[in-house]
Structures are given as structure tokens and as C-alpha cells.
Length: 183
Image 1 (tube, rainbow, N blue to C red):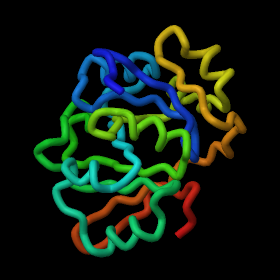
Image 2: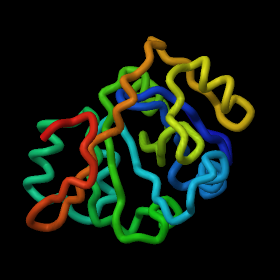
Image 3: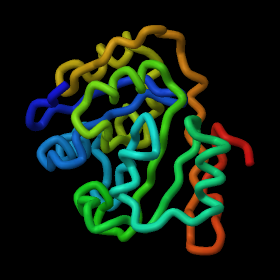
């Protein structure tokens, strides 16, 4: 599936609905920030259906982080690493780190497997400081004029628990937010 220039998708994951775009399409990245009314200083994260397509955006994955990946992903865990030179500053808000996630979601995996590069720059599907949308109908009502809404296989509402966020340093990690994955 080739995304058109500036195209933003809205889709179901295993935690909350998300917005996503090609990480190399800076028009689409800018559009995500505009749709959400998101502070440009807040980075997006990268999602894929496996770790392989994400590795090129990460400078180094410590052994303990690979253990976390093997144990908890796919699932509701976001890991933050030092980014590689290939990772665009536009999605990281000029920071030197990038968050990655591999959702445990049949809907997301089916979507991303069709996208060139199998990676999306993502954030939750909502206006900043409002709750994420709960289902396909709500996504259509709120965002069909600004995003391509992807119909899920199963439109059950998610629990709306965000992912657990972990900052991975060279030797150790720090839990920044507790969420769907309990460590």
C-alpha cells in the first residue's frame, strides 16, 4: 500500500486508536501535529509489526532491551532508545531519542504489512488532552475529514490503557509511565 503524500491514517491498535503516517513524509507528520493540536516539542513514536523494520531507526539495542522485546512485544510496551542517523528529526522533535512499539493487534499488523517499509510514525488518535477515540464509528465522526480511517476486523472497544513507556539507557532502564504492560 502506497500512502499518498500528506496522508494520515487512523487505526485500531491493542491499546488505543492511533494516527499514523509514513515517517519520511514530513507533510503528513506536520498534518498529524495539526490534527491533534499537539505541541511540536512532543515527539511521535514508530510502530511496526516486528523489530526488524524498526532497527534502522535505533542506534543501539542493549541486551536487556532485547530481553524486554522478546518477553513483552508484540504488546503494550513502548521502548525509547537513542536514535540512529536515519531517524528523522521531524518525528523526534529534535531530540536524540526515538520511541518504538510493536502492537499486538491483528488490525494493525494487517495494515502495516501492506505499507512500504512496514513502519508508521504514530501517536494516539485524539485532540491533545482529550481521550483517544474508542471505536471506528467515533473515529469516522471526529476525523474522517482529515484522516483515512481504517475499518478494523473487530470493532470492540479497547480498554484504552496506554502503553507502558520505558527509557532504555546503555546499562539500565527507567519506567517513565506504567500502562498496559506490568513489569
